[in-house]
Amino acid sequence: MPTIKEYLGALITSVNQGRVLADVESANIAQMYAQDPLLKHFPVPRFRASEVELSIPVAIEKVAGQPAKEYQPIDVKGFNTKAYQVVKDTLKVGSFERKLSQSIQQLVSVQTSELEKSLSAGEDVSKSLQGFAGHVANGVVKRQSNASNAERKTLDTSSDQDLRSLLTQRLYEELKPEIRQPAVTADIENASIIVEAARLREINSNYLIHIRMKLSEEGMEWSTMTDEDGEVVRKLLPE
Image (cartoon, rainbow, N blue to C red; front, top):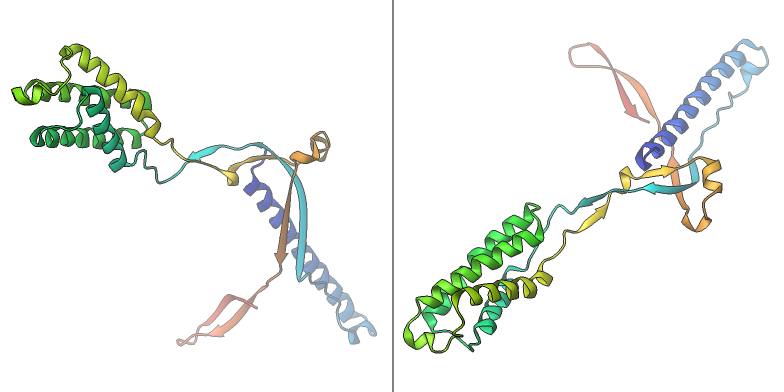
């Protein structure tokens, strides 16, 4: 099946070739007029189409999608904020001691940056997010284990392994909706189309597309001139 651009290109080429044949015929008529004692006094007829309008029914058979050129998989600031909140909710604390808070936020920020790079490179979303959640959970549990006694009293006293598993799960579940899917745009130029009349008659008219084109004629002509060195130069210029 031809693509849209191939089909439209062929149509325009055909119209142009038809115009060439018309000029060839005009030249033949001019020669005939020149040889006739009466017709040589008449103007030579020449048809010129100032505008050609085409209306072509087609049906799209297959169109491929292509990813958008610019893909930002996550809103980094919002993602970091939500991840930090999930950590606090899982550990059942309203706030951390300042030093621990800064350490966890830095951990989240670094892992978010790695996640963004992975997603932008086209890596699997679930696998990448699972890796992010695991790294953050491990880092949080490690920092929680190293927290001061006063700070540890405010934290959930679950075992490290249980806390790590729970935090990994919650980070994954809560943050997955925050990941944007790559935008896909239809590659219309390379869409395969049906143009055969017999096949188009079998398709419901609601699924047909009518392409309307207006072609305006413009001419080029050879111009002969002499350059500064006295050489005769021929250039193809617009009329």
